[in-house]
Amino acid sequence: MSNSSKFIPKFNLYTDEQLAAAERNRASLDSGNIEIVRLVWPDQHGLLRGKSVTKESYLACLESGMDITMAPFFFDTANGIVLNPFSPDGGFAIEGLGGSPNVKMVPDPGTFTVLPWVEETAVVICDLYMSDGRLFPFAPRSILKTSLGKMAENGYGLVAGIEMEWYLTRLVDNMLEHGSLGAPGSPADPPKVAPVARGYNYLLSDHLDEIDHILRPIRKALVSMDLPLRSLDDEWAPSQVETTFDVLDGLAAADAAVLFRMAVKQISKRHGHIASFMCTPAIQGFYANGWHLHTSVVDLSTGENLMVPSFDEPLSDLGQHYVGGTLEHGIAASVFTTPTVNGYRRRRPYSLAPDRLTWGQDNRAAMMRVISAPGDKASHVENRVGDSAANPYLYIAAQAAAGLDGILSKTKPGPLSEDPYKADVPQLPTSLAEAIDALEADTFYRQAFGSTFIDYLVAMKRSEVTRYQAWLAEHPDADQYVNGVTDWEHREYFEVF
Image 1 (tube, rainbow, N blue to C red):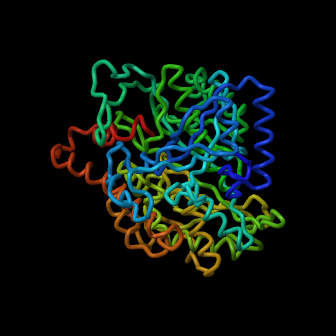
Image 2: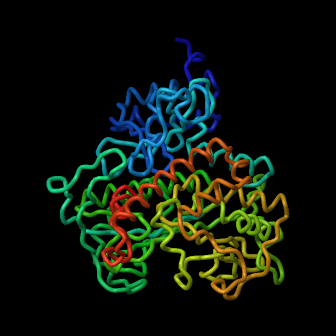
């Protein structure tokens, strides 16, 4: 078979930069001790799925890709089958997707990363393609690449910093012998866990020291993976940890987020612990996890930060328009920023999480917190609306699309808020059901991401909400919930996220 007939060169899928990265991958495999490569792709929920392949298979994948079933795209968060795989179009409203056909998994060789906690193993993030060389339209990484591409067409780049909260717990019983192993649409019994700290003691050094034996291998792994780790912090609630990273471009930031969550969960489990990025676990005394997304817009040709203010303005005109677009589309973006039933427990007044469409100068109650000073090249904004279970690709894509629309439309954000919880502005959705309705009716994201994808995501999320509402109808006594959180939510999200 000639090289030109192989899938990747046939459709000219690699850039010059990726071709160079592929050569470095080959050299690394020739000179190193890597025997297994985990080929992974982020699904509609931000979870990594894929296959472990041998070194020889990976080398072939760098030219031909690898066939893989698209079946996981039929699943909601409990692996319930939402769409009919055997209808003519598989329920996707796109010809050729009936019968659950294979798609092509194409490695992005620039993401090749050696895993420090697994012997002789590396991981590579992949893009999914149709058999005719088109990007698979339901893959979140494709959605983000398209959104960033639209920014690039206008001369802009997105720079993002990750600030994410999560819980570390000690495994008491994995429930494999005593509990349900689950079924499609019905998650297994979650593991029984115990907290690793007590008391609400924000930024307490002693709490960090108590869990240093777990944080140390996580920290060493993240640094070894070349993820730009900045800090590991003791967060507000017992057993809650916050992790921050230095800035990356938009796609690299999303890739870093999924690799970070993978590393934390896998390393913790190998050390007898369970890490969870679920917003609010059903564990007494636990508090909501958030994901604060820091972003700025740069000039692609010069790298100059275009949001830096002058004189007494909070941001440049472009930066203010970027915020205006984010606020204008913030309600419809809720499914992307807060995609779980459980995540809406954050949206309470005076909770350090936003409940309405506000922006403020260094104000942690606002949805968009401005961190800036005249002439400060690090000036940027922090979107505080997301929860830690958000799909990184869709969260950042939604931010990029809304911000760009604000820039191009010169959308004004309105006055800065000094008391965001009392501002007379529209409220954010207070439930996933409400957010789904807003997204379904929205025209902007249908244009930005495609109506086919929006209808697909609405169907996925409605399945989740329907199962939740059915459980509530059978378990109406809120006094039986732990920490105000239902057993359904804990079973659905604790271990998977």
